[in-house]
Length: 197
Image (cartoon, rainbow, N blue to C red; front, side, top):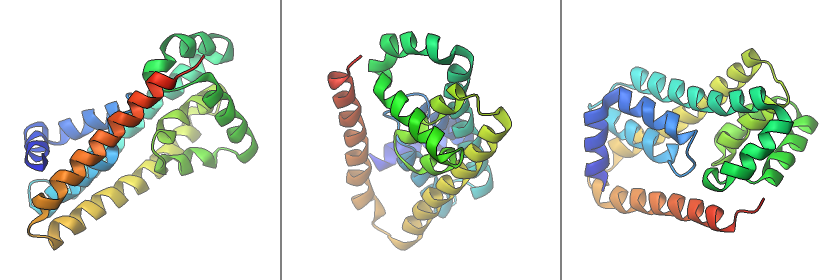
């Protein structure tokens, strides 16, 4: 499994990382932990360089988050509810999720955009209340970029550390990466099946 993923990284390169990170923030079951973690391993193995990896991953994540911000910002509350009613099942988002995040966002302020970048699913969903609440694009992009950069650095650093410490890494990482992907898909499937208007 690891060899397959590393082959995909080698083939797609930085553009592949960029596209995967855009998708990770639009389509729920694509985990950044695997993408950027393997990128860090690729750096340790001399297959990639850290600066372009970080740029590709961060810019991709910011653009993916900006997608949801713009939808929330442009549609507003009245038009966004029908959007969630229609597509929420496939996005693993219920209207009550949006409402509770909106309340949390209103109570705790814009720093929530930064903090939620470290949480699975939350990193995508938090962009919606930011857009709905008319947070300025500049502030949204600054808070998002800061949080995403820190999170990606942690993932790349962890991958790099693993890549330099374990010679038999593939023996352990293959099952771990597979398990993480399976868990992400199962969590997504559970959300789709149990989704409610």
